[in-house]
Image (tube, rainbow, N blue to C red; front, side):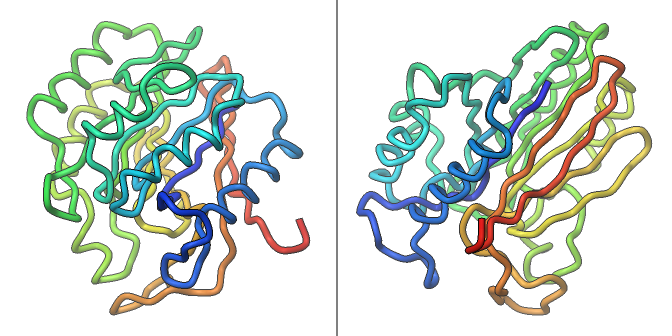
Length: 249
């Protein structure tokens, strides 16, 4: 089963307006066009937050871009989204806003790590409990857990100050459920691939601009827009890769 993840799209209500020098609607379309050519039959899509750049009008443009997806589009909010507006403006197919999504022998779990008025992340006690219950009730399934904020450092001090602030609680839940095989996020505008215990950790770059790796202070680098493919195997294995979308693609 193949999933495609698009994150940190930062759309605005007016086309062509740039965010930090990038026309985010243009770069999203480039990523979607690339994905249609390279990965033409995904089972579902994952949108992991910061879907708009503090502009509710961006959700209408997001709906236009994903209207013909033909598969479920699972959404969760980021710090530039307002969760209630996201759910209201992206209500109905193809968009899905459920925590628990079962695909045969796999669970895809979509967590809300947003904190109103803040850029850092936190999983409320109720969200952690919901995750724990969902994993317990579906103990026969392998699981992929998705959220917006990075739960492990990316190595940039300014960025890591804005990561998930209660990662220990998240990893404590995951440790109780060994069939959790993957944890994927956005927010950092950087790629990260690592393993913790039996869980693959995946940080995915943005469909627009990327943040400089290892920078002490905020800095945008020259890497192109990107998205991630994730292949979930019947045996609980995960294969994955980041697709960097260059001008030649």
